[in-house]
Length: 226
Image (cartoon, rainbow, N blue to C red; front, side):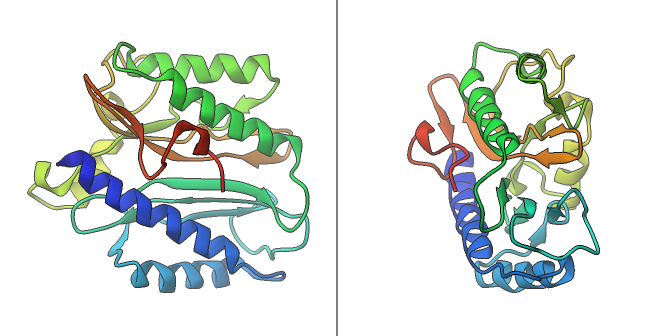
């Protein structure tokens, strides 16, 4: 039940982000992008956001305009009545990508494929940090790279605020001292930085005793592909 609910929500989230990026135009401001996001999310039936949409242009999260070649990073966690998605991309607008974008994509692929039911949640963070050291980049969030996800049926009171609060608890975050084994749905978003450049991709991962699946994707080959 949990898998099917999140699969549907994540599939819509991916379509929302693809539609948003396709409609971006040169000279758009942060405010205009957020307005477009609000309009599109309502058409997809979303009721809001687990966290406000994250839009970064050339390292700035406000008062910037989209220009050709600008590095834009978007992370969305749209909210339905019963679940939420988590999708993110980084691109150079209308030009070839900088090396850091390829690195961010490779890290997203590496972390999601590394996780399995035999590993502890904290091992994923250690792996991501080691990967960054080997590739001469830094993890942007030094304490965690994602969190466990919850559906409304498991949190009958104060949804979605209860889900939002639980993701802030250390035992539900993907961080180095979390000793719990993977079981359930996880939002994985290992964002990186190098000098004044930032990039990151985000996916939703489901793991139980018999199944491992990147939600909203037909295969592991589609991780980080937009």
